[in-house]
View (cartoon, rainbow, N blue to C red):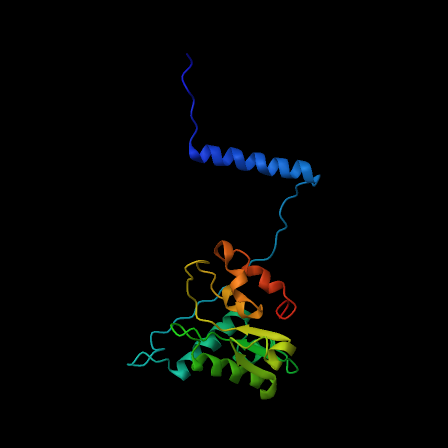
Length: 198
């Protein structure tokens, strides 16, 4: 009698996956192509040990300095005003999407720092709104030509570290519908007309 051969779980998954992909491609009649190369995303990290006062509250002036340092580094501009002009135009209608979750809210210092710089670009105060749960009822957000995602980074027990991707969940009428499969469809929110390209 011939000894029984066994394969590891990893080998089984690799083989089964290859078979499934091959069958799908064969049945679909589509050719495989190399992935399209795209430019690299730019990430800026700004830290300041003095951002919090002795009671753990954010200091407005330090938050403003940090925001300015970040936008200058992101855009390679020498000052915050010229940096903001690369992403916001005076005729823009701007929605600042904050987060009101009680355990990790967007601070007023961040919201006010953003609003200040946006107004310095020439955007009218009436054309700027800060909102979270009401974005689909907020006239500024419904007409917005630019959106700023201003949510503190955190992890989510289903979606993991989606960083700011999950913050836009309020742009769909029934946010619970995006939660299945560990929030696998979060990125689809960014294709909605109220969000796309803004």
